[in-house]
Image (cartoon, rainbow, N blue to C red):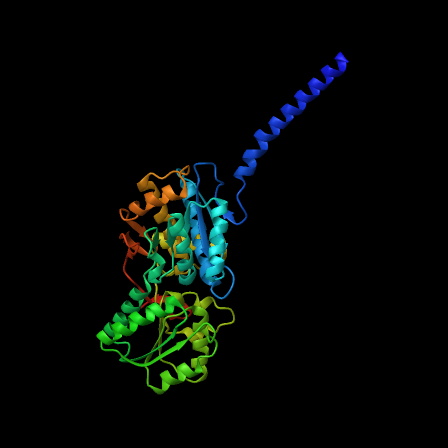
Length: 395
C-alpha cells in the first residue's frame, strides 16, 4: 500500500508539472497568434490594435482593397522602424451600412483600440454612431460626407463632399472648361448628393449655367440614356459626375454609343475607373477628376510607396491607398504626441487622440503640412488630373 501511494503521488506530481509546462508554453503562443486577416505583430500588451473596415467585395471593392493595401504597407514600415508596434485587422462591409456595423462589432471582439474606417460614406456614418457610443477613435480615409465626422471622436483624411463640389465648380470656371454644364448624380447616396448640392450652389456664384441637373438612385444605376440625352440636347459642354467609378464606366459607354463627347469631370470617387474589368479605357481619355494623389508623381515618398504597393499587389495604388497610408502615419504621429501605449483601453486612447490630432502636422502622400481642426476636418490643397494615354497626368 505504501508503494502504491508513493507511486500515485509521483504520478500526480508528473501530471501537475506537465500541465504547468503546457500552460507556460502554449498560452503565449495562442495569445500571440494573429487573428484571421490580421497583419503585423500579435498583441502582447504593448502592441496597439488598429481595425479597418471597407468594401473588399462588391461594386466598391476597388476602394476597400486599396485602403487595406495602403494601410498594410504603412503598418509594415512602422513596425520595421521599431518602437511602438501595430497590428492591423481589416473587415469587409461590402459598402453596406448594416454589414459595416457587424464588422465593427467583430473588430471590437478582436480587441480593436483604434478604427481606421470606414472607406465609403454611408457605412462610415452608420459606424460613427457606434464609435461615438463606445468612445472609440475613428479616422476615415475616404468617408467624405459631412456627417462622417459629426461626433468629436471622428476625424477624416479626405476632403468633405461640399468641399469637393465647391472646389470643382471653382476649377471649371477658373480654367474656362465650359459655360454650360450638366450634372448627373446619385440622389440616394450621401457622398454624391453632398458634392452635387455644393457644386450647384457654387456654379451659380461662378457664373456657370447648369443646363441639366439629372438624378438616379441605387435602384436605377445601370441605364443613363435619359439623363445623357437631356444633357446632350441642352448643349452641355461639360458633364459633372460626382459618383463612383462603377457607374461612371457605364455613363462613358452609353455616352459614346450616342456620340456625346463633352468634357467629363469627376471627384475622388472616380479613382479606380481605369481598373474596371472589361472597361475600354480609351473611353476615359480626357476625363478629369479631383483627387489628392497620383502614382505618376516623382517625389521620393510617392516613388517608394508605389514601388512597394506594386510589389505587394501587382498594380499601381490609387488615391484611396494613399489616404489609408497617410491615415496610419497620422494615427502613429498622434499616438507619439499623446504618449499612448498599448496597455491603454480604447476609450482612454480615444480621449488622448482627440486632443493630439489637432496638434500634429503630417507630410503625407496626399498633402504636405496636413493639419486637423477640432471638427475633425483636414486642411490640404486639392489636385486635378486628366486621363491621357491610359494614365493620370497633372491637369
